Length: 95
Image (cartoon, rainbow, N blue to C red; front, side, top):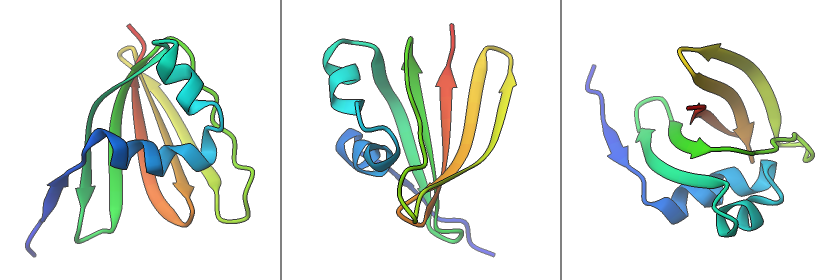
């Protein structure tokens, strides 16, 4: 099986996160959230986005948004969710 990974641009990452983080633009402007990197796994149709932040609020408000699982390990928080039916893992550096 061929694994195809595509690097995301910052704006693409914000488009994916915005539906579940309504105050994203405000948090970015205040310097509370910083984009580190993002990737799309084409074969799975899933995304992984890495952020550094001191504050973030994720909420599944829409019918196509849902929070799956949350894991904390080694000062990193991973939130698995779907945003507009797109599977996404958000990895947050808590240091």
